[in-house]
Length: 341
Image (cartoon, rainbow, N blue to C red; front, side, top):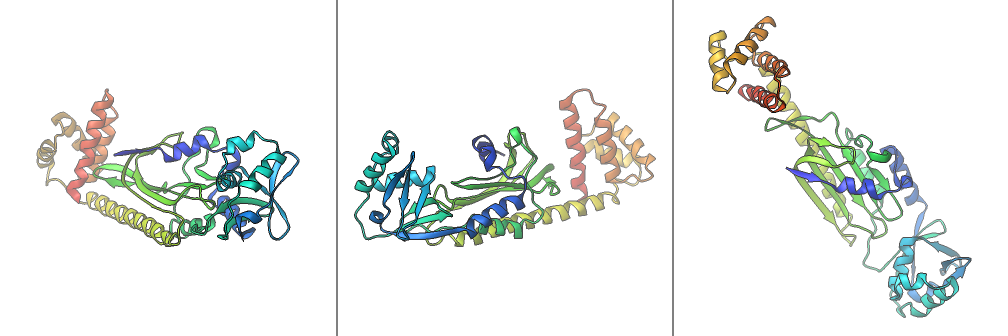
């Protein structure tokens, strides 16, 4: 089984203003950014970096000026072929002049994403954007029972969106079921960037525990899919939908199967009388003294069913002194359910 740390890394990297208290709040934010954003196509030489106060701005063909955030300023420096660290040592006036003089002379347009009067990213013609809101719409439609995990250290929510990318950690708290005799619940991560910071992706899994720093412990059936922001990136939404649908279908299948096993266990018996049951329990590795007490407790319930025996053994396990021995009794008790499958 695997230990997944992707959500934990996000927990420690994200500032409070990048956290969202609910999935709906995250979706509303992303939908608003999509609604008030627009693309501008311009040749590099027409960007016209200028200085105002203590910052560098750019002027576009519409004669309007736009501010740059840290990410788009970094992209502008790369487009100019000048180190960002070097530009940051210059005065805004000198920096804007250096950028104007080093921007490439090319007829190939540059794609700029603006939200309001702020430039969020600059890209070449091969970049294809996928909106965060579109990804979250798929999650909302096909993972209806999923929600963020319990809050982590410092109030981290598992739901994040900043100027560079989005990340969401979702689990189904009611989806617990058994896999090979152990309890697991389904969960997944999704991520995306509208500005080229990272790929589109999803990772689905079954897990046993999530701690306060959002490390996912003892994960199994881990499946990951990523897609770069090229012309086919929107096809990635279909694959993400398929993986989430498969996770949900597997959850329902396992949960229904577990219910069927429990139902049978509540009616089926391990023998016609206590002596036969004692022999079966001995074959399953239950110590004779413990088995005898479990049979007595089960008989008090009025039915010597598999379920009543498992319940009796589980209660008796709490009286065992050492944790390792208690765990072994619990495991042997749970294995009896396999006799009803």
